[in-house]
Length: 228
Length: 257
Image 1 (cartoon, rainbow over the protein chains, first blue to last red):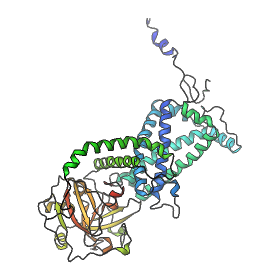
Image 2: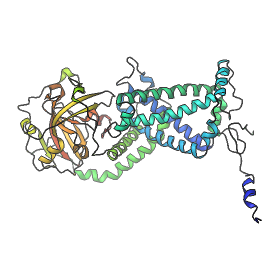
Image 3: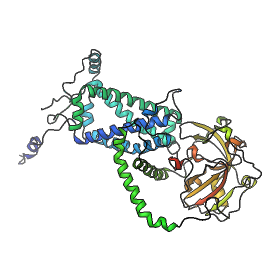
Image 4: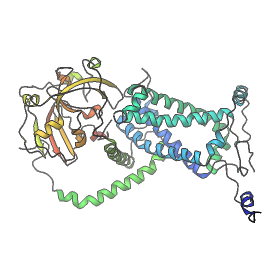
């Protein structure tokens, strides 16, 4: 006979804390830091790119470049990298430790992917409940997180090709690493265009990223609907 | 011997000492203010933002932090990858702050290399003196800050051998260079002592051609292209930050790769 029945009941006692919001404050802070730093990295990168273009004849207009010439584009880029890397690392740790990645981005079912694509092609974009990410959305978020990580790795390789010469040869050489770094930028810019366009179409998503958004049911998951 | 790096009359150093705390606090304040305006400024990308002074000084403060980080990352025992001689690009790529047609050749017979600063022996060197030192060859990649690169083959005495010969203080911070084309440059002592840092006098097995620095240029495998001054005429070992041509225009000083 066990005279201690408390363990089980203590665990099942409902907590009286208010339900978690869709975007807890650390996510919001990290999101907006990342938004600014990404723009710094992309536009200063365009300034650096222009001195030795990867695609012949393709230049970025001065209007879009951060830094009035290469020296300052480089200084912006190598200052921004610290903010990007530290903020990005904090985001990854947070995402894994709190379970947010698993909760928000998984599972992805192939049938759902197909359905979302079909719906989108018919201009049926469900956005009534912004706490539910559709399958394509999940894939896009995962792709852009991976692209961000890839940018840090390829960036490290072209910043220090001698100190990290093993990494450079793994990536297929210095010039290949440069092209990969450029391609990673293109992926992120592509994401950014879709991401911003959809956020503007559904403005309450922007408000949610500023104020936190709807509260989630306790023990929520991606399927959980908001509790007003 | 009179140093080619220093004017005869220097300002009173105590002035700097007296104002040092003020300079320090200005830099720190600039960094904080600049860091905060970093976010605000990016919203204005593309608008006619002419680097405000606070942003500029914040970026330069981070560039100096990056100098330090790069010095920590620099492994004095790590060799840059080398390549077979068959991959050497002939002729090498020309690059300077002016066009190749404006290169002014240097007369190797009358050329002298001045030595100054924290060294025991300040006698100037001739090309024959340099060539009498043990010679090293390396086939390495030249990487420009702009992004392009090529493989080149260089021969000459290592800077380490040279510094040991002139009895340089190997604990000094900097090795500085003056050149015939007014392109001052400087590197850290750790890089100066790296086995792949040469006073190059040959390219691809033949005497260095005029546009590439004849009679002697610095060639270091662990730094970006702009840290490799051509037509070197003077070397100084010093503890005073010497800067360089592009560095004084905003480029990062350490520029390690």
